[in-house]
Image (cartoon, rainbow, N blue to C red):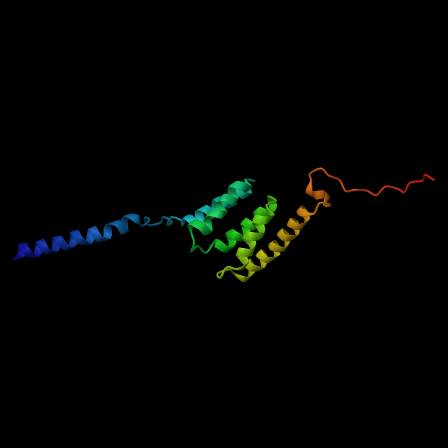
Length: 154
C-alpha cells in the first residue's frame, strides 16, 4: 500500500513538472527583465535608425508595425511618425495616405490624432507646392523668376 501511495505521489510530481516545466523555463530568472515584445523592439530600432539619419530603414521598420503587430498599442505613434518621415523624404502621397489612416484609427489618443491632422495639413500643402510648375522649390537649384525691367526701345 505504501508503495502504491509513493508511486502515485511520484507520478503526480512528474506530471506537475511536465506541465509546469515549459512555463518555468520561459520565465526570466529572478532579477532579470522580461524580454520586450517585438513591436516595441521594432519601434525602438526605428528610433535608433532615425537618430542615425537612416530614414529609409526607419520607415521600413515603422511600416512593419501595423502589418505584423495588428493589435499593438504602438500603431498610432508608428503611423504618425511614418507620415512625418514620408514628408521629410518628400514622399507626399504616402504621407497623406498614412496620416489620413492615422486620423481614422479607433485607438488613437487625442494628442496623436491632433499631431496626425497637423502633419496631414503640412503634407497636403507640400504635395500641392511640389505639383505647382511655378514653384521654384520643385526643382533643386532653381531660383525664383525676377521680373525684367520694361524695355526702353521706342
